[in-house]
Length: 219
Ligand SMILES: NC(=O)c1ccc[n+]([C@@H]2O[C@H](COP(=O)([O-])OP(=O)(O)OC[C@H]3O[C@@H](n4cnc5c(N)ncnc54)[C@H](OP(=O)(O)O)[C@@H]3O)[C@@H](O)[C@H]2O)c1
Image (tube, rainbow, N blue to C red; front, side, top):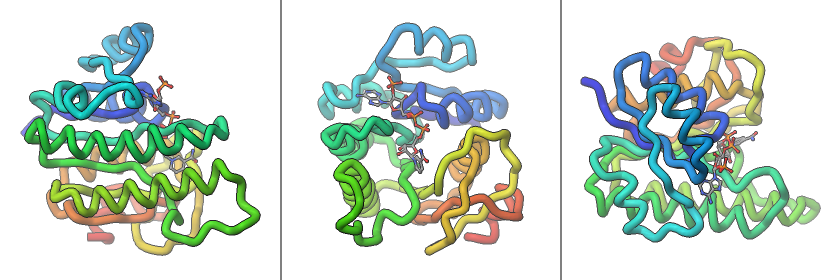
């Protein structure tokens, strides 16, 4: 059955790879963006963008953005600009408002894009931005696990812009082998279609198996 999928961080590099995959299989896609020119590009990809500024919006605005959707993918990020505060306002508070927005809008399915290794202690020599990012992802993942929603958490290693390989590995405590954004998008699409992925958290790294085979092996 086709679904309607909202993507928080709808103009992100992962999202722009995910939108065509979902459209190809007939899903409706609602990417959430904050600029008209981003919406125009996504309209051309067959999506139905809506506007949402993660940092300015309250829970009611998130719930309104999720109206009528079957699942939410959280693929936003405060960026690599070293801004400590945006790790909290986007990666952590954005995820927490997304979870509350899902509850308010009656959306059960939630897929969180986190990052590998965020449960490890942050070394004293790490930058403040990195420490803040790790804490934001760790705490938001905990909120996801406690949300009562039908969640899945994917924790990719370093994201690569090289073409997808359809060769990944899903599991726990994996070596942080880089993974392409194409393959992360394909894994999100597969997870959205797989009820047995509910309640599961996996590292996602480059590997040897196709996305579908890696998912089956992890389940
Ligand atoms: N980079 C890595 O190696 C790596 C590794 C593991 C996990 N991850 C995680 O993977 C996820 C997605 O990666 P990506 O490469 O697709 O990221 P990306 O291209 O940087 O996309 C992030 C998206 O978040 C949006 N965003 C930020 N602040 C916003 C706000 N206030 N309101 C609305 N939207 C806002 C951005 O919108 P604008 O375009 O408007 O700024 C952008 O579309 C992130 O959660 C990241 O932490 C990254």
